[in-house]
Amino acid sequence: MVSRVKFGVVGLDAMLSGGVLEKSVCAIVGTYGTGKTMFALQFAYEGLSRGEKVIYISLDEREELLRATIAQKGWDTEGFGDRFYLLRLDPTDFNLAISSIKSELPALIRSTGASRVIIDPISLFEGLFVDEAVRRQEMFRFVEVMRDEACTLVLTSETDAANPDGSRYGLAEYLADTVVLLRYIRSPGLTEVHLALEVVKMRRSAHSREIKPFEIHEDEITVYSEASLF
Image (spheres, rainbow, N blue to C red):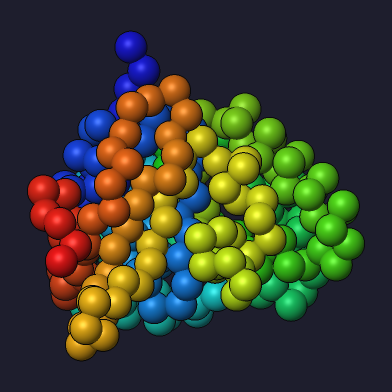
């Protein structure tokens, strides 16, 4: 029986039949403001709360801003000591970002014993490659390398402007085992905007195929897995 890794979001874990599969790759895809980083942080915090070691690589938010967000949620990361590795990479420094993610990350995982790894957002890493064929090749190689590590990987990705149901470069959802799509849903009368999520796919596991509303609170995310959208 394959072990499950919980997100720490009750409704989402229920939709995932208890959580993502251990040592699998999960992509959280959504447009701006849908909470991708909040889900990624929740995944990290759940692991830390269970005594695991976590590596969180940000290609977007500065480290101090992420720590401020964490503090606002009331999470005491100081209490986790050296089990939480929060790294910020500058995506504009092409050589450093490529080397850090491709070469240094696997070694860091092994040296720290991290069981959860988050890259937020992977779309900035993908954007470093101008040539589409090279981008596809490099992403495939990266994911294959990560599958050899003893960790569960979560990637966040912006959606494509022309296709709000897909990632910016159309790769993350094909390479990942599990894809969670975050979106805005407008009410029929256009009087309200709701946040909703869908588990688009989950290899080797049953999962909910319904679209469910969710809310982001100061200290938690609530997915209403038993509710209808309207």
